[in-house]
Length: 89
Image 1: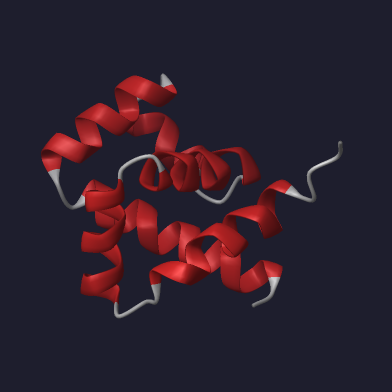
Image 2 (image 1 turned 180 degrees about the horizontal axis):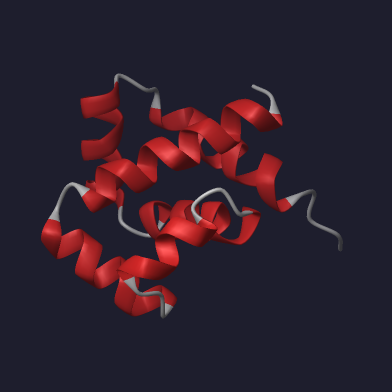
């Protein structure tokens, strides 16, 4: 997986979230964004990271997304890490 793949996956997750009004409302509430804000920041690294943070925090939602998108859930963590960078200790 490349960083471009991870960015594309983050946009897929965002589209998945926005298709469900309940998830959209919760996601916007947690991020502090408005629907209008999304248009301007949809491709930003910050929103992509927040999108991964959100879906990775809810296993049921994660599995639902992966099943619908035909994606192995095991790639989600590494994709997130590609966007956030290595963890320094």
